[in-house]
Length: 445
Image (spheres, rainbow, N blue to C red):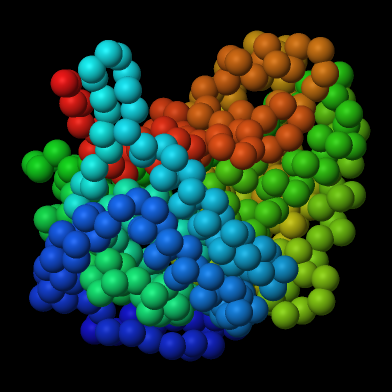
């Protein structure tokens, strides 16, 4: 296969195709990026920030067209796609200023300073579920730090990546921002090339492969590797509020979100009421294509992922799970809202990232059991606790990088995007995250 084809996940329509990048193209792109780095890093940070902001400002008039393209290629509804594109434009300027502040020379003691210098060339390998925002969050700090960037977007969403690239590259110096199209094999060649840092968002398995391929040259890595996020629902919680969050989080982006709630642990004293409320709320969601009115749940990205979700549902039911809504019989390309209760730890959806619109519920008899079950995972990206008295004490015992109490995981504003255990290696966002895109140098004088 010499071309990369992009399909509308709602109907299988071919949207476009690109030549696959070969080794020669990768080497040529890397060579151009290395040449461009020499002059790009010599600019002052305010000058680099000005370039980045000007480039993103040119996208704003095209935001509506980009959102529609994003919807068609990835499947999310137009409101969510518009929010992603608009959010990327807004956050780029914010991240640029935040990165510049984070990389200022700092005095740490008398006569000793910390300086932050460019690393060189950063490879950004971005996912399909948030193809603009997740790439954007890595590209901006890398550029402001003085690096040049090679973006390798997911093979599922090359069209929106191409459009995003074409708008930005017109307003940046030659070779500063580059694009390679390809599948996993292209990604492997890029990882093994002479890049200086690899910033990756994707699966745990691919992250481990990237780490292995980077080991011989000890390349810098910033990786977010998905999650299997737990939610603990305490008996003293506001049940309706908890149920609404459980459904909204499980179904967001058709469940194709790394911080979607994947495992819910509810106190058995309120389980019946909670489950009934979840079913009532979930049954109101509408499945359909991005341009259908009132759609909450779009298509699943491809047949492979669709099949995995059905396999998780089948596995749970065969092992004693109770299907309260939805089930194994699903239409092609879509998964209807599904609620499974009495999920146990040996089921696939308890141990693996399902990545679909499934509410998975387990009952617990005491809070210590709930904490143990919540922590029984290799993943540790996000976690949430719903309750009143004692909720914060529970939150402090959860093994996750981002934890929310009566809200989604993590905080807001300047908080980093960070995973624990096998959900991350390094992190991005916040001053500390932005500094991972630079080489710190200690200068004594």
